[in-house]
Image 1 (cartoon, helix red, strand yellow):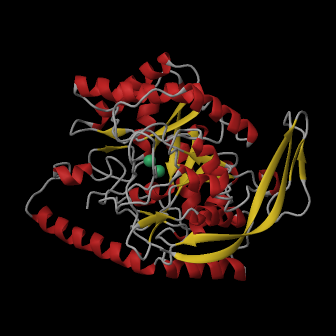
Image 2 (image 1 turned 180 degrees about the vertical axis):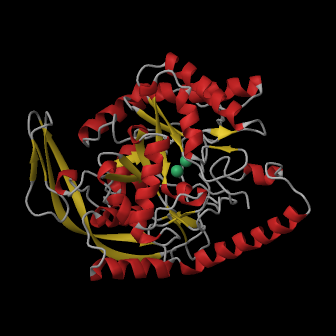
Image 3 (image 1 turned 180 degrees about the horizontal axis):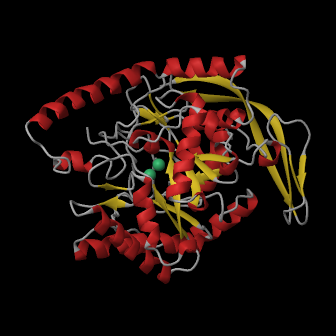
Length: 470
Ligand SMILES: [Zn+2]
Ligand SMILES: [Zn+2]
């Protein structure tokens, strides 16, 4: 049994009244902000309540792979790392009903910049539950898996789930067209050359897009795929071909290519590859990019200093075009710069560091985009079982929001930067040693004439599904 801790949390109560003006009072904000854009009135009132919550005593720093227990999207988590998944405690319906918000949503109008920050939340029990899971952590944007991402065939979207999804969206004032970015299945590889496998991949992909449209969701993010050993240009052409088909079979959903961290057979770790796919897409309004900060950094795009960040953004603009950037995945990286390893770290604790996220949060051109955390939240309890501590996301959302307009020379920033940096030190060192060891081996193999591109199966798989296999 984990340690019991009593904490004060804000409980948000939302009342919706038709029509015309929206009034929101943000957590910690003084006074209410008013906007006349909305067609309804939402009054968010808050009370401070004492909550006794079960919390694990120690923050676990090793991420687990995305996991589903059964058909119900149980324990869906986007942390992209392929290690054997530890057993998790099942979330029961009772747990969900009894849980009060860990943080109230911040009114975006109260921020100096319109940044919509959230996390990839669970859709256990049905897609409609993702909305409450998002409000639970104070998220103004979120991602989810639309169905089990480990299975090729899932039951169709239930009418009841769809109705509830729409009702809850309205109730909680999320814009499904702007702030929800479902993540595609890891099984789908649109670059697949084998005809039967390509059909299976396309069918799974199209099914996801159709679910998006049924739910009123416009943005959909997926991993471009793997060449399977073929030429990169061929793979890009196959991906674009499948996208063109899928766009014709649907009406509104915009497919977002996620940048990857891998090398070799992985498609999308270079901006040029994203550009080449987009170039072959017929309807340019239906394609975009989702930048993952961890992947970019591990692929060799620096974000740590303001100058490096601006350079990377300028490069993206020159190669792909900023107009295609529609969403971001906000993750720190346990692995060093250019290591091609996909190991998400909590904000400020990784090799990117807090300054990189200050750069993100203060970049004018990123305003209005959904920003989704995929950081690890698993902790190990004294009983050895892994539990998710969603307070980590609630805190990270508030931390990112606090960086907007923050002076990097202030004591507040410096102290936070130092604290988080120290928190991740041992994990960074561990991964650095692994990377150095691998580089040493690679150098030896290189002298034996091992050509790049002729990777082992294990190496090929690493990053193909956005995770490391070792
Ligand atoms: Zn991803
Ligand atoms: Zn990602």
